[in-house]
Amino acid sequence: MCKIRLQSILGAVFLLTISACSQGKKEASRDTPNQGTINISVEESFKPFMDEQLKVFALSFPETHIKVHYKSEIECLKDFVEDSTRMVFVTRGLAKKEEEGFKKQLGFTPTFGILAYNAVAVLVNKQSKDSVFTMSDLNKRLKGENKGQVVMDGNNLTGIVRFIKDSLAKKDILGKNVIAAKGSNAVLEYIATHPDAIGFVGMNWIGDTYDTRQEVYRKNVRTALIECTLCIEKGYFSQPSQSTIGKGQYSLSLPIYYILKENAPGLGSGLLNFMSEERGQLIFRRSFLVPAKMSFQKRKGLM
Image (cartoon, rainbow, N blue to C red; front, side, top):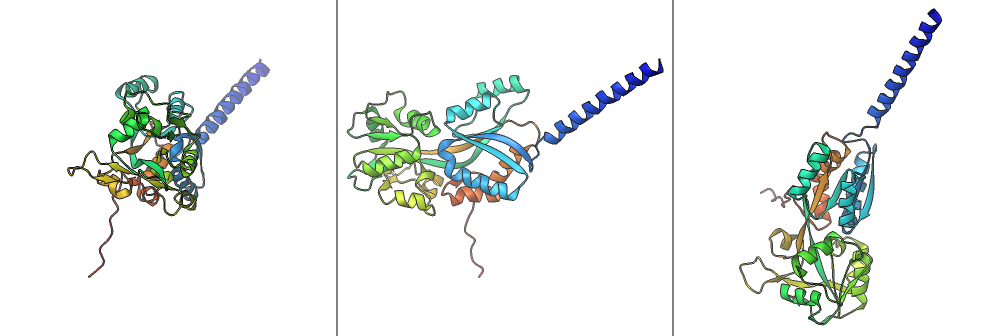
């Protein structure tokens, strides 16, 4: 009898020990704002500045491991819905119905907001005779009514492609002159060798004057002047830049959104805080984008 009781007690202790160890492992595996491992999915056109953000964040917090997956915007959002990623960076936030759906599924609503502003640059070859476009010109070119090819990263539904379709093509069907390229680099390479074509890429792929790779592209490619639809002055045209985006003078600007699925502070919150505060916002500014969370102004010298 005593033997049976002893075996029962030892068995109970063993189960409690396993449970405690299992719980301990579970607790240890939970990430915090400055340590742990998570997956994030990022709109592939954001790669130049996102690589820099993650590099500086990893140096600042060496106990963090962020596994980044660069994909089209639609694939990023699919990952988010299927719960294979904690956080996504895309060109739009959540619609009301999407918020409601996540609340039913998760018990809480994911947070989202704008970190910075990018723009869609319209590219032309350096030898091109036409480098000034109205919105109507671009619409007609996309529909195939105006001569000349149009190239963009169209193999996947990236945020850039979605934005162009929504803001320029609208409900019109794209013409046969619209060519799909395999990524933003391929768009730049195509425009560099085709004087009669125009291309669409994120400004961050061509506007960074410190990037030696972009400097090579700028020898054969330039950004076109685009009609300002919000300017009081009629006939005003501008190129994408921090200044024209910030002043609302460039018509093809678009936001950089985060969408985060955390109901308690975790590594996703840590990355968001970093990108929202001074160092992260300076990286956006250094990438020639417009920070949305902080305003940086030149300090006046002491008199």
